[in-house]
Amino acid sequence: MPTLDDMKRMADKQAQPLLTELQKKPKDAALLNQTALTYKAAHQFKLAAEYFKKSLEIDPKNVAVRADYASCLYYTGDVDGAIAQLQKSLTYDPKHVGTLYNLGMIEWKGKGDADAAVATWEKLLKLNPALPQKEQIQHLIEVAKQGKAAVAEKQPN
Image (cartoon, rainbow, N blue to C red; front, side, top):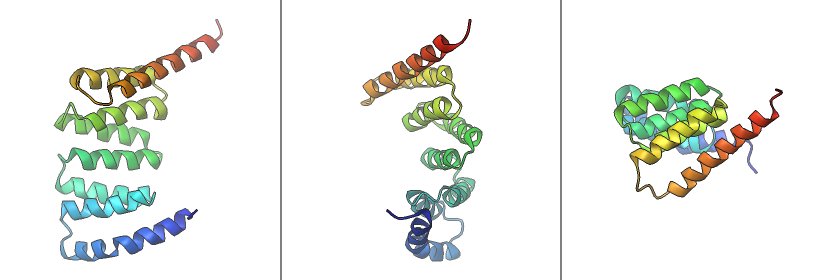
């Protein structure tokens, strides 16, 4: 099993041609995104976030890039920053499945707010009624509600 240092070295090697190309085209949003994805795949979330952020400075309405940026922020411990990025994505595409799904997960797991997560996932299902993952989302809603109920039962009277 490779260590994070091993993964960083592999990512640096894989990213080298991209970084060379970025020297010629520093404002290429797609190239910045590709570089970020290389580092994200190697769990180098802080470095990946830097490249996603640069890509978004050039192409701020790219919802997919913003979702990847948000996940990197989450994995580096910036839960509020991740939520802010996902909420910004919703201003560009209020029905975006990945954004709504991730927002719910971060509200639930990152903030411990089952109510917010359930509301987000219910909105996801309402806006996307033919969603192929509908059963999975419904299951998450039930698990979040059950978890909240279990916590409430443990509270002293």
